[in-house]
Image (cartoon, rainbow, N blue to C red):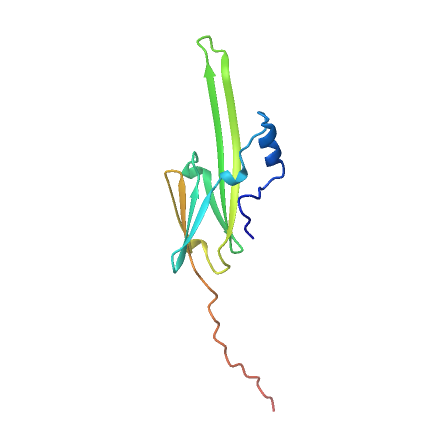
Length: 143
């Protein structure tokens, strides 16, 4: 169920905006991995924004009809003065994931993905269960 933007994800968002604490991060998890899904008739196109990530940092996994997208990043920034003393040293490590139900009949070979300019594009075909042809099975009569 979708709620209007008036409803926030966290009760404390309004409180933090009111008090404006500088130590509280206002970055929401919804700001990461923004996704668009387009119905293209015979397939779905998934577009996911992953700015700052490299192709090697992104993994796709299909299990039990669920497509899981995972992106991991590591970064270190060291700045030293002329004497070699640290002026600033920052490290960041993070992982974010999103999951999409694509259907139980979709296989890894069916899914196509490409990554360019910080955008992951995934094409997932629409597949439904093939109706099984009912066979007539007879029971042998002895005697």
